[in-house]
Image 1 (cartoon, helix red, strand yellow):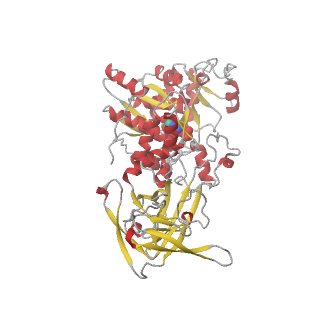
Image 2 (cartoon, helix red, strand yellow):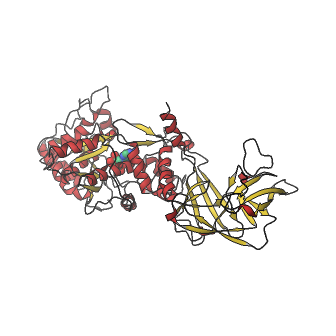
Image 3 (tube, helix red, strand yellow):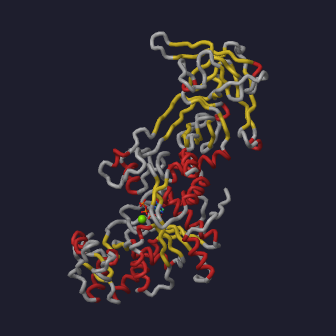
Length: 566
Ligand code: ATP
Ligand code: MG
């Protein structure tokens, strides 16, 4: 496991925590929580919240709870619970014994709700849902009192009890907090705190047919667990007043404070669980862990490392204003990580046969290559060289355009770490004109890739030995969404915004034989082509499938340079 180091600078939340520690506000305790709703897989946006909540706890000798906010049995499943646990662990964080479920508090939450009724601060409302919405008013128009607002405490207690007993159908009654229908903050206009949902729950089974709403559950769960800093995203800003109201109006032992930070938005990416679920359900991607998905399981399968994601979360920082992060920064972070750690190997994605006419037939040389050009400690490997090789189709042109320095008729190039070769002939299919193979000669004096006579060549290309190479499937990925900033929030037409070229599968690639037994999840750099991951699901022994994580062209480095020179 990599060390997880604290960020180099203090963001506003870390500053608040430092100040609280200095003033001994919570007797030196820092208790945070990561509270996912188990209604989908975690995505890179959740990673930001995970790194923050677990990060600040770890940095301050505190604890971070993993709490499932499982109050809506219609959308939640055990599969999601398990995936979330394994994703948080994969990110490198540990909740220890602090695994909680909001559903474990249902009894206590019910008792609290009864207390509010008894205090005249909650009532059973029997308006149908659309009327409740209508009566709520708008930003410009105050709300209107429900005709049921004046129900007596006894009637409310009786109705709430019978709601719990299952006497009423879904949508016929709700429990609402009695706050202020004219409040400028719509959240405070008598919010619903309990509803009837006749649905089995993945943990409580059929014990309950009424379920508490998020705003009621969340603050009380925080309080029950003794959370000191309740960190959430900006869209909950208006809910803070309700968070505080609930805690102030109940005899709770502790009153946590909620702080909001900007959620992560990424270019060319959708981040809403609802839309990601739709992609999965409509078969537009190959499951939650499709390597194009921004889910942690998708990123993991693509080949992203937890270290790269954590670095990314540190680099984007924490702001109080929403903005959009260029996906190029995420790609930059995985490049930086793998540049340090990934072995270099050779692979040819679109093979073109090269025959070296003056190389002895049947001869093989085992060349010894370093696995990493800057790190001898990463060892060496054998790469066979022989008379017939494959190079990339792209590295050869019959009529080379200007500035094309790779192979062409009559031209000499360097085969990486091997020999200089010169193209002497081209074999074509007579009918189609397709290039079948090219013939070259090699200069035996240039072994290792340099010439004793100081002769220079402009191009260096990669290669594999045809007889020794392993055939492999390689998948190239592009962004899931075709446009950087398109707002894919609506279901309507949202599929049209998908990048139709987000996946390209190449079936007949050739990779060097050292990769034959590469373990699933092995990450390598294919020289000149990018970083690739051995797919953990589709690979089988001796038959790796490679996912391209990123190409080598770092657009973020360019963006940064441009910003610096401004
Ligand atoms: P979505 O809007 O994608 O459906 P959500 O907010 O409903 O996500 P939750 O399971 O409730 O998902 O999220 C758990 C925690 O992760 C919450 O505290 C939430 O604020 C945080 N979170 C969710 N999305 C992001 C994001 N894009 N950036 C930062 N934090 C996020
Ligand atoms: Mg949510």
